[in-house]
Structure formats: structure tokens, C-alpha cells
Length: 388
Image (cartoon, rainbow, N blue to C red; front, top):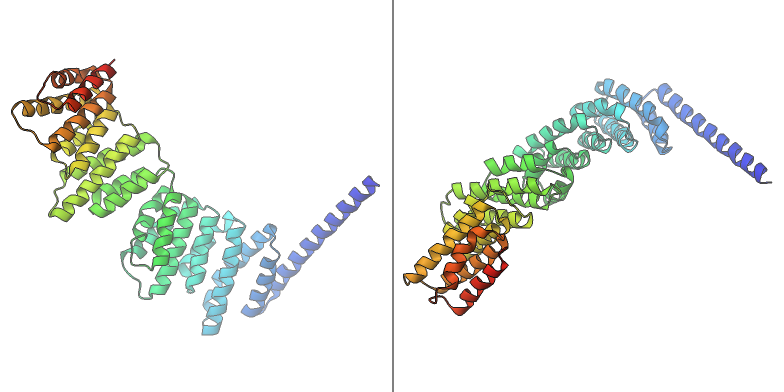
């Protein structure tokens, strides 16, 4: 009985498969024999309606034929139906991930008058991960970003399609155009989509982000650095980006207090990234020391001390030693206030984090100086005990 049922199931499957093949052949024949665009449109709708991936070569062939014959359909009604037909075929080819049709889809994105058909072709290239077209789509979005198109609605539709495609392609070349689209002239819908797509563009967007940090406005530098911090890039890559931002944040001078604060915000974010990613290299030490010495506010100065403490390298420990000795010298000279006391205590506590013997002389100097408050002296003694 089981054998009979199995044979029956196989027979039904074969019959269904045969029926599907016959149906496909019928619709293919109907398309080939169609005399006008309405008949072609109907045949292709039925073919796509089968939901059968094996029809992709037929659809690709139909797309090529439609592209070649596009100039025939000049009347307004025909143009609308032509665009709708291209759209249906392009969407199916993307859903089926039929990469052999990539060149035809790109041609459709360039030459078909209907904006929605162009957009569908672009999104289908993303669906099938046609990486050969990542740069071209990125350049198209870059061009759209420059200024509003004559028909803003058409420009927005194409920009939206480019963002969707680049998110699926996951190619770093798409990062910068999508980054700028998120603050472009588009409607909120497009800008939000671009912002949401950024994390999907590339696991490691470090290279395009470093380029943005090196050449763009302070606000964009901050946004780019935050994107790097939120990305899946490895710690060392985030550190090199943070070092770049920190150093540039000190090289550039704020023209007014507002700009000075923005530069400080950039440096603070960079310092936090160095702390989180446990930077232990020498490259960030000079920037960290500069943030302590010339920081916009106490928050920046305290972050700089923490970054030096977490770093723990000989250059970082040397920097902490020297600034603690300077604070101690000032204290002896009678230069003291609440802010200096707060900085001294933080410097001592972060010096202890280094576990580096270089800081010992400064800690000993504070621990035996009775001009400091008992709280700071106790902190110095505790830091000495933490030394190896």
C-alpha cells in the first residue's frame, strides 16, 4: 500500500511538473505571437503569475525584445503600458535573482522613459547582488544628491531605488552616496531610508568614512565617526578612524564658540571610541594630551585622561606622569582650585589603570605632599599599591 501511495505521489508530481512546463510554453508562445503591446503585456503578466523561477530566461528574452522595440510605443497610453510591462518583468527577474539579465536591467534603468520602470530595474540589480553594477548605481545616486531634479518626484523615486539597491549590494562604494542622501534634498521618506540603510551597506565602512572625515564639514565628520562607531568594523579599524578624527579635531580651529563646541564633540566621540576599543598604541597619545591641555570643557579633559589611562603604553604613562607632576608643582606654588583638584584625582586614578611603572614617581610625589587634600593623597597611595 505504501509503495502504491509513493508511486501515486510521484505520478502526480510528474503530472504537475508537466502541466507547469506546458503552461509556461503556452504563455511563451502567446507572447511570441502577440501582435501588440496589450497582448504582450497580458502574456507576460500570466507568465510572471506562475511564480516559476524557470521562466526567468524567457522573461529576460522578453525584456531584451521590449528594449529593442521601445521606440514603437510613442503614444501616451502606449508609453504608460510599456513602462508597466518593463516594471513587471524587471521585478520578476530581480525576485528570481537571474543575474544573466543584469546588463539588460541596467539598460532599462538608463533608457526606459518610465521612472518607476527605471527604479524597479535598479532595485532588481540589488536583489540579484549584481556587484558589477554597484559603482554605477553609486555614481547615479551621487549625481542625484547634487541638486534637486527638474521633476523632484522622479528624482526621489530613483534615489530611493538606488538606496535600496546599494543596501542589498553591500558594497563599500555605496556608503558615501547613501551617507549624503541621508541629509540630501529629498523628502523625509528617502532620507530616513538612507539613514536606515547605512549599517547594511558594508560591515567595515572605514575607508569611505575616513575620506568623509578628512574632507567634509564638522557636522558630517561627527555623523561619519558615529557611523564608524556603530559599524561592525574591527576594533583596530575603529581606532585608526578615531585617531584621525581626534587629530583633525585639534588641527582645525573653530571660528566661533558654536564651531569650537562641534570640534570638541568630534574629539569627545573619538576619545570614547579609543576607550571602548581599548586603544594601546602611541598614535593617539598626542591628541589625548592636547584634549587635556586645551579641551573645550571639563568633560573633554576627563575623557582625555581616561583614554590615556586605558591606553597604558609608555608614551601614555609618560604623559600622565608629567601632567600629574605639573599639577603637583602648581599645588606647591599655591595654584589650586576645585577644578584642578578634580583633574588631579582623575589623573591619579587613570594612572593606576596603566599598571605602568613610569607613573610611579608622580604618584609618590603626590602621596607625600601634605598640601593636597586627604582624598587625593589616599587616591595616590591606592594607585601606588595597584602598581606591579
